[in-house]
Amino acid sequence: MADIKNNNAAPAFGEQNKHEALLLKYKNVVICVLVALIVCVCGAFFYKSYTEKNFTEASTEMAKAQEYFSEAVMADDATLFAKALNGDSIEAGFLAFVDKGGKVGNLANLYVGLCYAHMGDMQQAANYIEKYDVADDAMVSPAALGALADVKANLGQADEAAALFVKAAEAADNNTLSGQFLVKAGEIFESLGKKDEALKVYEQVKAKYPQSPASRTIDAYIERVK
Image (cartoon, rainbow, N blue to C red; front, side, top):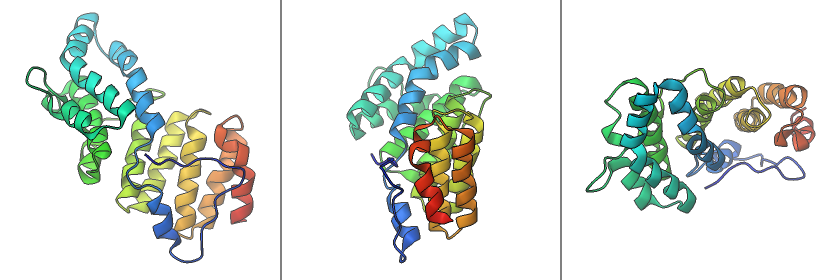
């Protein structure tokens, strides 16, 4: 699973086919770290959103699907993602919960979209992640926006992907995620020939998220587009 990695210098784009080369970086991606983050925090997200009784019921209902999903992420196994989606002969998968409504159905849409993305069906991934109702939380919703941005980039919808990365960075507003999102947005802007927009987001990383991993090489990105 691909992801943008920070090296000692900003990656260079060739003069020809820059847009296609950039989008190739997003083939078969939904950011690994974001998926892992969602797995880690979804329990806390549920707990904050439900009464104790409803939390117990929701966790029990979706427990097997979540187990398959976690195992699938660790193994990058399409068969396990399919089981997380569809369930097995005993337990229901995430698809069984998307029509339930409420926060169970909402989070199920996000899980379903992530499963489809890992299985390579990016259009279905976009369809379901777009149904996820972004909440006022610090981690899951920004992660969901970032995942959708990756999917959109994979589909060749570069302008929308860049805008979503910027939105995800604003929603997260932390050194953990925001710098990474803004660098991805900047690289897409560069691929589209929008150097001014790229410079703006790169400078935002330097000024606003100096402790982010992305800030370590951001001067090279800034220099490249000036």
